Length: 172
Image (cartoon, rainbow, N blue to C red; front, side, top):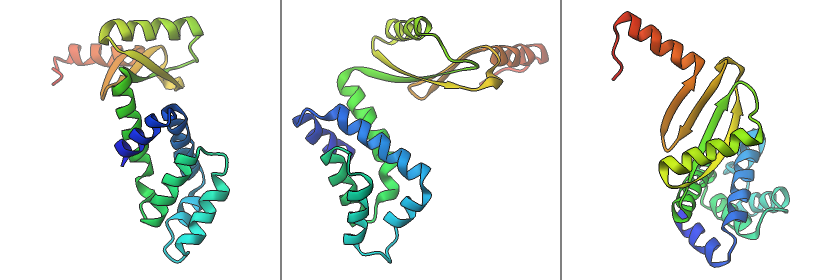
């Protein structure tokens, strides 16, 4: 599904717009459980559910609206988050981009974000699409999630590693 949508979006030179639309749709369904419930409710007719999609996502790109209507018609709206992740992963692979998330205690300044992106590009050879998340319990340092891997450069992570070393534990 995601590949077909990406193929069509690229032919229309709308891959970025579709990705944004998919992310917004996933966010809307996450933030509004009643919307998810209505779109997946078989007691409502397919036409009624399509009208809901048209009303709620009126400002979304046409390709995204059409795709959402297709998911509604086939009762597959629960797959939208997976489709969005797959779409993004495939689009990034085609562009030579890796997504990464930097988890820090406080927001990073712009210079530090650019330095992280450059370090990722130097290490992977890929352009980094970096997002930030703030979690005060990180204390200090950066926890980087990228390519299914976690690189822990936080104070908490270093303290845990030191504790394991002192206890003679090995990490597998």
